[in-house]
Image (tube, rainbow, N blue to C red; front, side, top):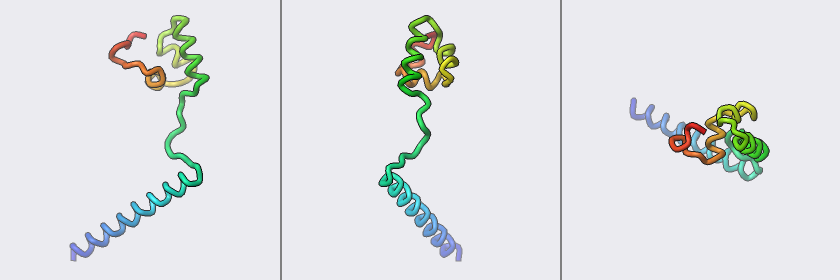
Length: 86
């Protein structure tokens, strides 16, 4: 009896997975892309680089352009352990 219930549960899970995959493929075909929109734009990155060149810290520059310092580090491509005191 439990084996039958387990098999039905697994079948239902496979159907859900298949429908989800089909929905994602259909969304991509319509030109939709999943995921969160990037917080760092080219304009914000340009402004952040200018602020850093003026002597601001990463924390201060990130606060001025209204992004997190982690996002700014990622956009700059800086390894946090090397230049943590930027």
